[in-house]
Figure 1: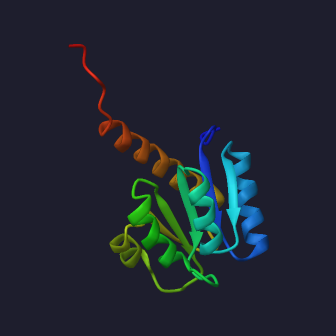
Figure 2: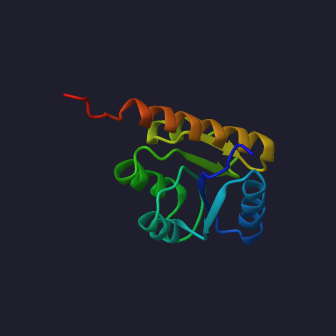
Length: 137
């Protein structure tokens, strides 16, 4: 269970897709929180820290790209994976905006789990490099 103890925020306006993603991550051991759009996601982000965010691109109120922009400012260490049904490859745009990755729907659940697991591990390594410990003096 790669995700044991890690928190992931699933942001998806389609109820069935949101429930499916939540079930996949729960089964992998993640603590899953879900939001219907970017506004709900921001409320969740104000309540607790997340190890990763998986968000749809197209949603009402606050879309995935807008949510990504806010997270890069307020929670820059949190990896964001954008998921979209767009036929255009958005990987370059997503990368320029600071996303960890862009995945086209429908996506293979095992690939998505592997991708998010990698994002969480990379983020944890980066955070540990920036930690400072007091020295005995």
